Image (cartoon, rainbow, N blue to C red):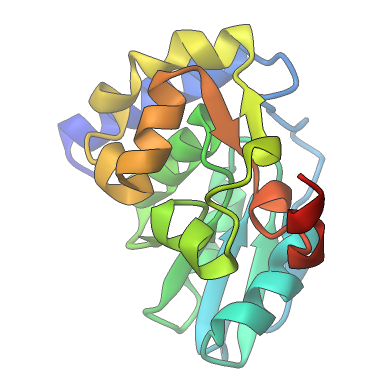
Length: 190
């Protein structure tokens, strides 16, 4: 890890520790992540901040199988990295379009190659939910404070989430994964 990467990792970790308001979660050291599947034989390894939704995304997105998934809400730990390295070069991050998950992705990316597969413009279009106002949630105070740091800690976050999602974040909103994959039959009721 180069000096710039190390600096980003330290700033992200410090931010999570000083802003742990429920959005910027830091699990106690004895709290293990949820691991499903065999990372040694996986065709795709997924890190998900909300692992309970991965099965719905996998079914919609046709990810290469077999899949191994690591789920952890909040900041990852270095203990998660060996599982994520696994044997597959295809590593995906699935998370919300919000400052905490963007920083989780940035932290992971400083440790290993991983691709953003979380909520972004394309994800919303694929799931047919971009136009639903009901899935936009106001940012928490800590999340609002984080927005100005995103370009420093995840310089390409706007490219990762897209123009529409970037404008939501700039406007004080986020979209969580459960909103992005909402049952399409509910669209007529919003």
